[in-house]
Each structure stands twice: as C-alpha cells, then as structure tokens.
Image (cartoon, rainbow, N blue to C red; front, top):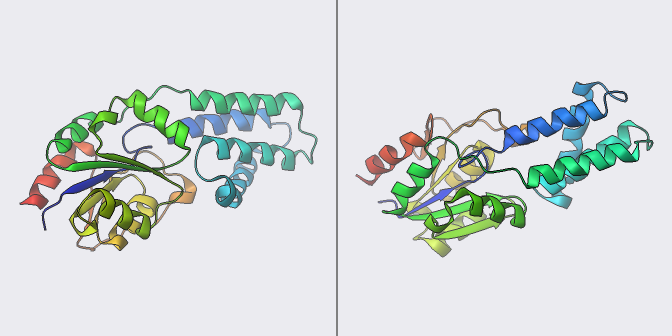
Length: 232
C-alpha cells in the first residue's frame, strides 16, 4: 500500500535538543559539586526524572523540577537559595534557546510535503514545542501538529486515522526507538529510526531487527529516497 502520511518527531529528529539538556546537567553538577559526586548526582537526577514523568510529563519544566528535587535530596534539605535560583535560570535559558535544525531536516520535510500529508507528532510542553516549531520555519509544511503526553500505539493509530488514511499507509520518523519506532510499528505503520547523538537514558530500547516495517537510516538525507522506493 502506498504511503499517504508521514509523521515526524521534533526534538533530536528535526532540531537539536538533547545536547542542551546535557549542557544543563553539566551546569547542575557544578552547582552541587560540594554536595555530591557528579556521576552519583546525575544518577539521582535520572531517578527523579523517572519518578516524575507521570506527574510532570516530558519537557524542560519537568526537568527543572526534577533538578530542584534532586538538589534538595542530596543536600538533606539545605540547598542554598542561590542554587535553586541558578537552576531556574538554566531552565529559562533552555526554554529560550534558538532552534538549530539538524542536517537535511528542511530539505526532507519540504520535499515530502509536496507528495504526502506531513504530521508533527511530539511529546513535551505545548508552549515550548509551539515556540520551537515557529522558530524552525517548518510550521507551514505540516498538515497537522500533535503534542501528546506520551507516544503509544493507540496514540499513533488515532493520529494516522484522524489526519491520514490509517496506520497501514503511514510512516513515523524519529530518533527514538522506544517512542517513535516501536509503538508506530505496533500500530501498523512503518517505523523509521534516524539516530541523533546520545539518546536519553529513559528512552533506550532494542531495535526490531528483521521486522518488515522497520528501517534505520544514517540521516534525514536518506529519507526521501526511501519513501520513493517504498511508494514504488
């Protein structure tokens, strides 16, 4: 069946994202250097993020709250007010950071928007994702945008049915096997993995090697030829 609909993830698929988190984590470790070893501190932060996903969801705001919670824990409640202030300032900087598109992102979206319905399906804070999409210059190319609390097979099935012709004629493109590829394939769509840098520790999964609807690409520059081949 020919493809009619192509979904794209946003963060670390179309533009850089995780690298800003890594820089902020480094700043966080320096702020708490007198209270915890950096590796131990970041392990505690990851534990806090895992605990808090169900409460705060994905995005910068939840990340900042997890940093504050971790700072309180490792200092036994004695974290200086200036450290809390610095953490909040780092979060505001993340929320205002300029958007830097990944290689071939604009070319791939522009080309495929001429022939298919292009969707943006992303997790995170609605206001932050709206800001990044507006700054990316890609917004007008998407047939629809969905900012979701999580990415599951049912979420993809509904999105591809609502904005396209169903999952069987759809493809999801993203850097995360756990969020972008595996649930899309479970929904019946193609799952295209385009790795980007170091993945978030809570978003790691094994590739579905051998599945007929799975492909791994070295970059977005290989996406248009793949779509052309699958369309026959």
